[in-house]
Amino acid sequence: MAIYGYARVSTRDQSTDMQVSRLLEAGIPKERIFMDVISGATEDRPQLNSLLNLLNKGDVLTVWKVDRLGRRTAHLARLLEEFDLKGITVRSLTEGVDTSDRSSRVSYLLMSVIAQNERETINERIRSGIDHAQKYGTKTGRPIGRPKASSAKVQHALDLLASGKSYRHASSIAGVSLATLVRRVQSMQQQNQFTRQTSIFETIKQEAS
Image 1: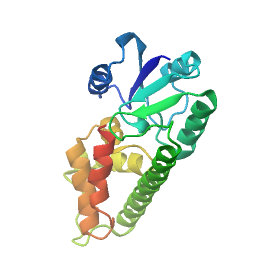
Image 2: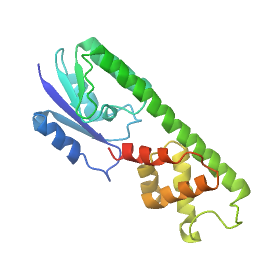
Image 3: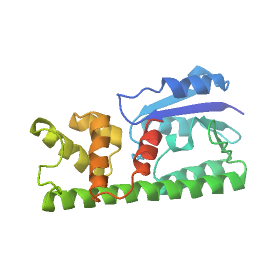
Image 4: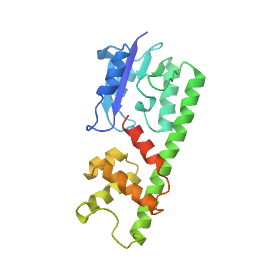
């Protein structure tokens, strides 16, 4: 039996150092830790694919969180099923998931479905808020957002959010700070153009992982 580790971050602005440190602390040799810098929504990940080719029956794949293997529930379910068929166990350091235990695997997939539905609901409401704001403007009649110099960038970030990008990815691509983007969505909420507030911070916390 061999134990391997896998770490993933979504962009090059993020670092795998924290995940790798936790894997090393768990006793996984550095040469058996594989890392990708790619979105969790992307199914084709070079290092994960290389790792899959190495794993054999009885091996254990350890991750900091299971969503490092993928953010989309359907893809994650297929991966876990593939591991199960090959006799490979997946363990999470932070969630207590151990796929050698069927009930643990089922419970995690259920939580994953709920989390994905939450993300999709947030994106739909952001898109709806953007459309409403573009059509009607704000209650005060002033242009939505901060000064004109940054309004185009913020609008770009909002469009990226609505298309499914993460908060951190959208702010990085558009060239605005994460705080500015959060404030804009909060402003839309206060104008009843976006109806869910706490989920913003829950989502950002997940993305920072």
